[in-house]
Length: 205
Image (cartoon, rainbow, N blue to C red; front, side):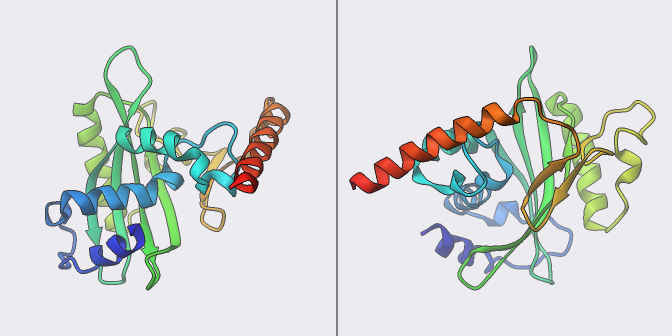
């Protein structure tokens, strides 16, 4: 059903550079969020990259989906759909982060290419609206966003990821880091235990 809805999204008229969000019905917006959330949303600590699509994690991703807002949706002539999402961020005051990138679907509505081009630092909604609009426009124009990386921005917070240690892997469709994770062994044990639960549930059906 979601894949069918995604295919229908490609029926939207192409308006180069113009936000086509208003052309989408509420059902289409929800379908797009659902299709994207397991890529751009926070993965459960006990989920692997392979089993995060299992129904076992539906509740987690429903909560994630509700925390994300689709702000920009532009279908280009080359078939790419450029998107801008914002989501709530942990903070003592109301703050959000923005996620900008593009996705391509095949004839069945399945993701074949995905890249998150930037994730911003968390900011007030007002500041984020200004910063994310600027970054999104530059992304559409194919401009280099490296001047807005933390190490190049002169102390002004624009883009948190990518940076000198974190990059997006299009083949694996996730953020990668050169940093050492001291909790890696603990997390792998949690993932293994949860996978055993999933296998048990699937075998009992």
